[in-house]
Structures are given as structure tokens and as C-alpha cells.
Length: 263
Image 1 (cartoon, rainbow, N blue to C red):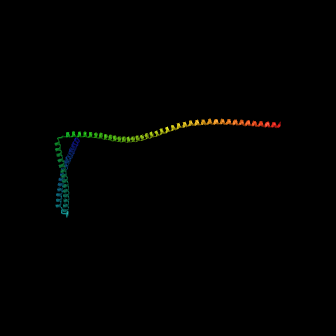
Image 2: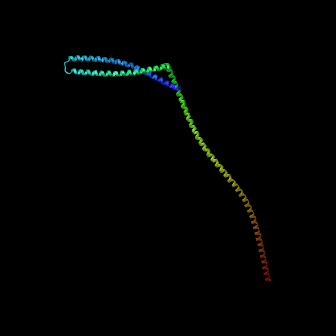
Image 3: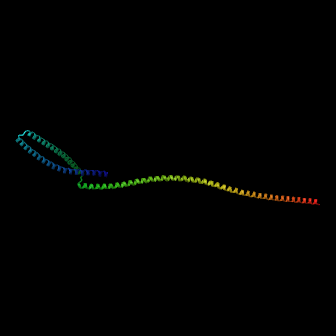
């Protein structure tokens, strides 16, 4: 509400100032137009008197002159001068009427503004003070607009930062989901590894057990083979002894036969 009142008062004061300047300009123009009109009237009266003088002189000369065709030329000359003077007069009259109408309009506007000033009860000093206050208010409004623009820029920056934060949170959520999936996969593979490790441990134990049994079997087999080899050796030795004994017996028998024959 205060801003609307200040704006209206500003418009009124500006209109008053413009009208006063216009009135002053028209007043100066009015004085100049009056001086011009006086000058034109004086020059026109001078021209008229000079034209009348020339016409009188020409008339007198025409009366004294007996030459043919002189009257027609003088009449044509006087008619052309009268027509030119008539045109100048009407042009000056139109300019005077236009200036007078503009002056009347300016005076009416001045009277209306004076009434408006009297109605508002303001003086020139009050108007100047109001104008100064309006200038101060405009400067304050400009500063407030600058602050508002800075606040708007900060708000836009905050909104951009909020959007960037939301994007970062979305990326963080995505990475956290991927991390949860990776952790779940790690737990799954860890359980699989533990299961396989337990199976491998049991297989290693079974392997060690079987290795022990194999060593025992090998040892028993080696012992059995050693026994068999010993028995075979003993059999071979006994057989060789038997063969040797049989050979000795045969040899002894041969010797006995040979000795008997000899005898």
C-alpha cells in the first residue's frame, strides 16, 4: 500500500514538474511569439505603407504617362503584391491562432495542476523534500533489489547444490546396493569355499588314512615277500645241498664201481 502511494505521488510530482517546465517553455515561446507578432505587424504595416506609397507613386506616374499598356502592367503588379500580402497575412494568422490555442491549453493545464497542488496542500519545498525522499526510496529499492537478486542467486545455487546432493545420494545408494550384492556374493562364495574346504579336509584325512593303510599293506607285503624269498632261498639251498649230496653219492658210487672193476 505504501509503495502504491509513493508511486502515485511520484507520478503526480513528475507530471507537475513536466507541466511547469512546459508552461515555462510556452511562456517564453509566448513572449517570443508576441515579439514576433509585433515585429511582423510592424513589418507588415511598413510593407503596406510602402506598397501604398509605391502604388500611389505608380498611379501618379501612370496618370502622367501616355504610353500604351502601362495601366495593365501596373494592375497586374498590384494584384500579385496584394495576393502575396494576403497569403502572408493568413499564414501569420494561422500561426497566431495555433500558438494561442497551445497557450490556452498550457494555461488550463497549469491551472489544473495549481488546483491539484492546492488540494494536496504541498509547497515547492515540500515537493522537493518529497522528491528527495522518493530518490532515497528508489536508492533503497535498488539496494533491496540487488540484495533480492543476490538472495535469488544464492537460492538457485542452493537448489543446484540440493540437486547435486540428490544425484550423489542416488549414486551412493546405487553403489551401496552394488556393495550389498557384492557382499552377498562374497558370503555365498565364502560358504561354498568353507564347504569345499571341509570336503577337502575330509578327503585329505581319508587320503592320509588310506596312505597309512597302504603303507601297512606295503610293509606286510614286503615282509611276506621277504619271508617267501627266505623260504625260497632256504629251499634252493636245501635243494642244492640235496643235489650236491646226490652228486657226491653218485660220484662215490662211480668211484666204488670203478674201484670194484679195477679190483
